[in-house]
Image (cartoon, rainbow, N blue to C red):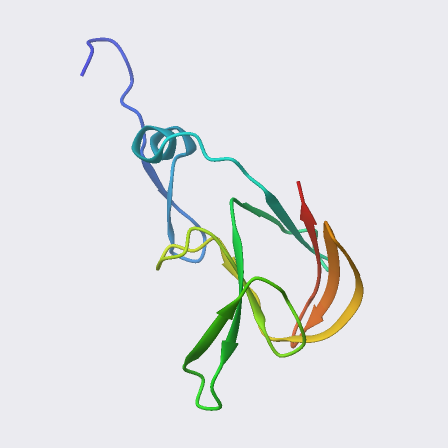
Length: 118
């Protein structure tokens, strides 16, 4: 530690108890991350960004079945990183309102979202 310099806080705790890594620490560990996708939840404007996305399909018992590159009814959206520290996961899609190559507006079991390719 450099004398006279306040130590850097590497982790913070969110209200729900999850630990969140500081952006600068993430850059040090993982390098610059390009954000290619932006998800916005309609009811409160919650915005999440990620480098990649996957669409997941589930078995009737709730266990993982298969992953896809494209979304459709019955799949949930998973935003990278693709490990236990994923950025965001939606519940299953119930309706696709609008879809283009770089945009999809969809409804899930409990929210409405807009997903943008950036």
